[in-house]
Length: 312
Image 1 (tube, rainbow, N blue to C red):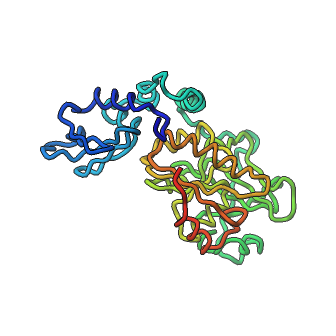
Image 2: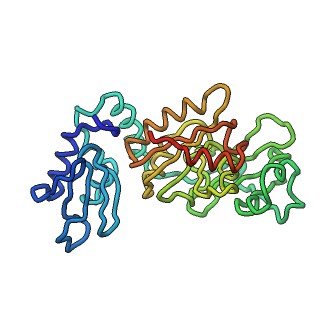
């Protein structure tokens, strides 16, 4: 079994079905084949790994995993492509965990817009300069970061004494996190009916490589330290809807940088999430922090831990 928990026979069957394997050249762990996505390709430039189905074309630079290969060739949905590799030889535990999550994603593919009912008319005021910002906020983030993420406040009684951190989906505000800075409980509040598990904070950073963190301050702090491809899942767990969002982008590498707290919740989440992601994306890495979380870590620590990240 390979690191994607797919039997090599399944990879061969998929490749044999959709690619010109009869004219393939054996290159050790890869097959070298004419690219199915561009022509002419008289001097084959398409390589696909025999053991995990990861592919790359040196001609047109297209790349991805086995599921993405099927989706591109058949022009089918994620669910249809997944069923193509639904072989009983796939490790049953992995298949059960992943398929349950993926099928839930596909069955609930439309992300519902936020409906706040009694809070439907809430508006927030963006901080215009650092003089307007609470000392707590300036102690954690630079003004450039505060301005970039459009932080602010609201006069709505429920959210007084809290920093409003807007959450965007395709450049539209769909909700927010209200972070306390006056020792109120709870530390975080969300709008009525807002499901944080349906969204990813800083989704405009979803490109070929992303760094996955837990909280909004983690993502903003990472952005400030030069890692502007950081996104937050707003908690310890990666939900079905969030996984669907990730799968909609051409992501090749995911670096997990979750909290390193005393209860080890972040570490346990890291293990669980990495097992789910490695089945769907070509490269998964883990950053082992020394500090409690990315927001507490220095820029030097983040850079060092990134350079020492380990592959799953």
